[in-house]
Image 1 (cartoon, helix red, strand yellow):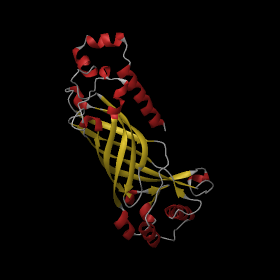
Image 2 (cartoon, rainbow, N blue to C red):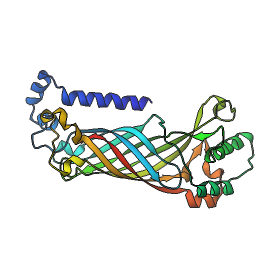
Image 3 (cartoon, one colour):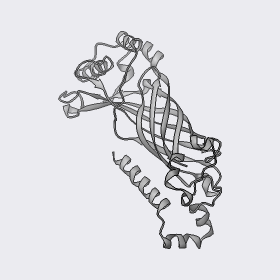
Image 4 (cartoon, helix red, strand yellow):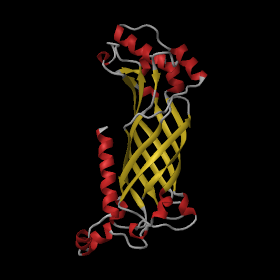
Length: 284
């Protein structure tokens, strides 16, 4: 939540700077040639220094855990330090609110999990953790998956940000967390004090191709001084999304997932390729 708050503040500052520079600030920048190049785009500029947006992810196609929901992202266009024609830089995104994404496992996945589940453990704590995960996979009363969190860092590239579709390619790496509810009062899970406990997945990779539909029809601009209210639509983006998530790396309250099921399940579902679409607003 703290990281998400920082992102919101950054978004506000960038927006305020871009759309509301004071006369004194503009005058100062005008006196410095490089600052003017960097911060006040020419009329033919095609890229901004800072990139930012909000995006909704929907990824229904895959075998295991679904990632999805609304999240902000922001980045720095390193290419802008020497050119105003393209985007090449680094960015980060973070979903810090669990949202409403529901896990709907296939019957095959549930049956394979149940057949591969390890029923006996050396202590009550491990047993409690394993059976909580089992209940959640089976959507048993009292335990369920609800929502998700994720965060990524990555690189982005757009050769023509304001024309030819405004294609943006992005490659990123990050974590995924899936809350299991119904854990409050269970002393073997976070001392019984947590309403939900996270199933955490690390070192996951994703790739996206994003478009600005408006730029298929005419060339747009990154110079905000030329924009009017009716130009809001040019920031709309759609995209196609792919991610590779590693269930074999998952942990639940410190217990490894591959200690809950046998190797045959891990061999089949340990690495999952998921596909989805995105819809959002972005400045780049």
